[in-house]
Image 1: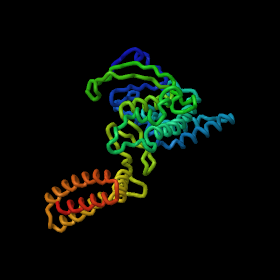
Image 2 (image 1 turned 135 degrees about the vertical axis):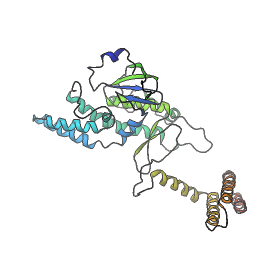
Image 3 (image 1 turned 180 degrees about the horizontal axis):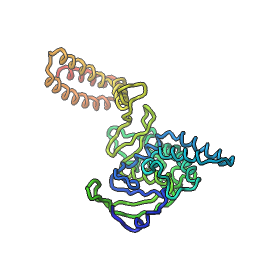
Length: 335
């Protein structure tokens, strides 16, 4: 790794002062060699069950308030901290902090976790998933910045970020630059931004905004409610977890099927295409039609369907829509 400036004095740096190097497509935390996609840790934080950590904090607080010995409960807090996203990447068992942080640090982490799960869920829902924000056919595809602006929450990106509470406002972060490289070529040679974070909320703020700039956006699955990371250029609505009540089908499988069934219910052209598809596919099974013949029919049928969908949408009366449907039915069964 390239050594510049402050790196020479990092040996006694507190472990609470976490170093992150931000590259073009990913970033690196502390000495980890594997890059992390933008938005991945925030996605994990939004989806994390923080109850165990908060309960351990409550037990520690009870011991402190009563004046009892608390070392055992502090060890339990540290153990739960090492299990949390972000911290599990650079805190190892028995390594502790160097030097050990004040007790208030652990309680601050608890408050930051609650703020992230509450405020960032609100921000992402308002920015990207409100009614009317999804792209419709023929519309200009909005950039993430346009969607934030058009949904009226651009002011929350800076200033009192992500809410009205000053506690949510990320503190100023000092930026340095460094060369990231490796002799064995396991990492790319890259000029990266190097930042140091004392609070989890500060890191989450920077990771989210840098991710939005690059098209990495945490997204909540409408089927199971869990969060997943939307990669640049992708438009998935559902996650790839096994769907609730299923043993093999994912939420994405279920969502695609529901979307298709919705099209069948709402549009006569889709119904006619589906009916014809089933009829011709049955011929393949009965061996009265070859697979190459079916594939040729299927390709032409999709073209006929898509053209008819446009004519059907432009039709202004029930009679005109009926004419379009009758015409496409003949074409699909004549191909």
